[in-house]
Image (cartoon, rainbow, N blue to C red):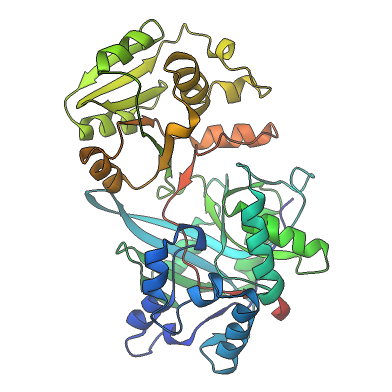
Amino acid sequence: MPDIRPFTPYYYACGRAGEQSSNGALRKAVAPPYDVISKDDEKRMKQFEYNITHIILPETYKKAAEIQEKWVSENIFINNAKKAMYIYGIEFTINDDPTVIKRYGIVALLRLTEFFSGADVHPHEMTFPKYTEDRFKLISETDSNYSPIFTIYDGKGFANEIINKHINGQPFLETVDDDGFAHKIWVIENEQDIEYIQNKFATTPVIIADGHHRYITALKRSRLGGCKYIMSMFIDFNDPGLKIYTSYRMIKKMSYQNMDEVIDKMKGFFDISELGTFDDLIDAINSERERRAFGLAFNERFVVFYLDNSVNTEEYIDEPQSKKWRNLPVPILHYVVFDKFLKIPKEEIVFKKNLAGIKRLFKDKHFDAVFMVSNTKLEDIKKITELGEIMPQKSTYFFPKPLSGLLIHKHREE
């Protein structure tokens, strides 16, 4: 079962409680995870000489290690002497809705184990070698993690009492990201609280939601004698702030003249409902809980396709995965709608996440069409991982993500 431990992370000295203008200085220093930083954002952030991108997106991997050691010697990075666990809270909004959502997780070290080895640390998506090679070169030089991997677990709220006890106090670290979301860190030092959390996790499997490449990289490093743990953030399935999104599928060129031609191809398999606007389409997909629903914006028309329950989709998906996997919305969209019905080539499909950007690109006709699918459910992820399978590509997007540089796990300190 999962083995988690307290640790002594490094953090930016400018973020310490009581420092003047600490929030502004810390905001200039931290960054999103390395794999979602655009070239323009990287250039902007590197204008600040102490921004974490100088390490996570370095000129050379050796240079990254040199910068890190320099910042430690100059007390740009400092650490706590006492081992602890941490609470990571994020306050955020979704799209144009002003409602503030709060999400809290425990940050600690997770012992690295081989997947599906009985240790109950499960992946939920595939990894790509080119990304693990890059991160392996970085960790080989720096021997550090710069943001926690994102894991989820079905704890039925066992950490709530401890979390609630701490979040009413002053955060240990606090900053705001470029989206205006507040990121806050509190310290759990009480030994009884730490032991309670460890004992609960000893019987609670965890699923890697985001950070697979960093986990695989650290695991490879550990096989060669490196650190046996990786910094991780644990979010309970039952946290109301845990949101899962599915990437939008933008189609560069449709081979159909109008929506009526598309509807003709889909009739008999789907119940079809036409809506008035792009926003109506988004609302319909996001509010659907029972049926497998697919949205399409094309040729200035907006349609929702609801899968007819009498259709046996397994007949159309010639893949070796389980019945449960073949009945997920994403395989149905790709193997049935794209491949069998509409004959959309893979090279015409572009995956996008940012809704505001998608609406702008569609309005300006940079893409012919936008397909959307109802969001993946937590229970589906849990079931698929229990079966020893991997979720379909681009079926989950966990948001918002923890920042890079807010907490740093320097392996040699453990």
